[in-house]
Length: 74
Image 1: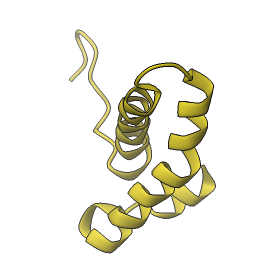
Image 2: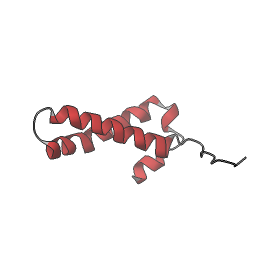
Image 3: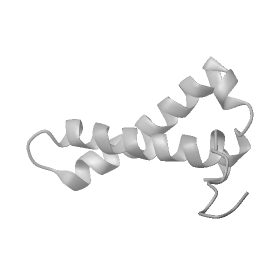
C-alpha cells in the first residue's frame, strides 16, 4: 500500500499514473481474486471486487474527502 500512498497528489491529475494504477490492480489482484472465488463468472465477480477495492484506495489515499462534521460542530 506504500506504493499507492506515494501517488497521492499526482494520480488524480495524471492519466498515465491512473493507467498504471489500473494495470497494477488488474495484474496484482484480479487473477488472485478470480482464482480464490472460482466457479462460474469468477473473473466478472473478481473484476467487480477490484473495482470496489480500487475505488476505496483512490478515495482513501489519492483523493480523500474532507472530514465530515458531526452534529453541533461548526
